[in-house]
Length: 338
Image (cartoon, rainbow, N blue to C red; front, side, top):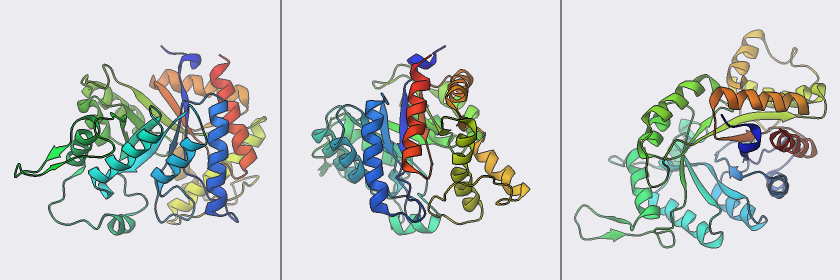
């Protein structure tokens, strides 16, 4: 059983746009956080991909990945997740192959099946036509580009190659919030990242499916689980709980069908949500790590013990940038000082 000291921690950043802020400010804050995360010993810094969402600025995640990698030196940088259903596998391979050329040994390619916001936005992104390959086929094509020597058309005449990218072996991860990606990742022997930061109800079953279906590959000889969770840490329990109300408000607004910029914290949510809304939000966030340094350390230890995760990825939605930085600093200290 791994202890905190041997369990790496990482960052999942959607470049949150705060109420009264701007995408420009959010992206500058992302760069600042990435540099600090590297100093504090985080293993990875992944950018979440969302579209048509007023509260997130990381829609063009490969571009942001390149910028983050350029202002850091060692931390791995990647996508959490690139939504492969929207894009040509060849295009994705070329983009991440190019990133790998510029930043060798530091790029991760996390892939997801989610729409990115809603099905209407997905339709605009995809412009899909009848007969397009489904996710598993797209994934196999992408693997052929990055971990092999390209693909060949069914007529046997034309071949296709990712240049740059071919045979660079950029690490490919599958991300998911349910069971399909868990099983597929296991069958292909790929590392799996579970979205515990918004779908904890499926967490234990998805991890079990991944481990049970795992087959060794040239990538992995045993399962590797990265678990993403919400974290709100502060120097006092009271302040940590207050900061977490921005996260609660985000999920509350989503249950009401409204994706908005991240709202400032409030002293109490009692007058903001109804009892039914409270339960709905808490059902999405019950794995969250919230508290002062001592509580964060204990909750982190319990989560690792419960899930046997190989790595923890923190998703921190705090309104004030300096408070957000402090939260990540506290988490890093909790993970190291076991």
